[in-house]
Image (cartoon, rainbow, N blue to C red; front, side, top):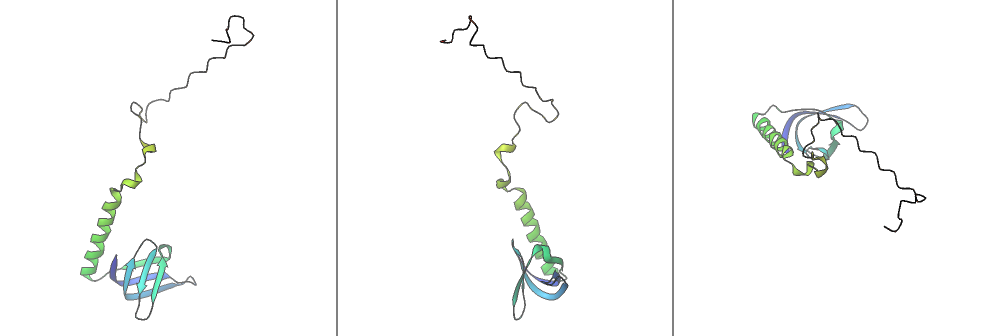
Length: 117
């Protein structure tokens, strides 16, 4: 999402806060891109400390884009795995069923056991 941001505070490479006013920003998965008059900078999201919009049109645009992104993420089918499905008949409150102990194998020395069956 691209917007004109009134105030952005980021952590610079040396760790000190840096305030930028009235800059164009582009928000992406990698981080925040800030376009100045003579350069383009990219800050990872961990380095972005604060952002503010005072222009009403920019506020509306940013708000609508954020809402659309939240709705899209809520209906994202990639988050649903078949492994997480609950089996029919089992509820979280039902007690687990203990497996029955295995039957002992017949002894090969038992004369009543036919090994060729």
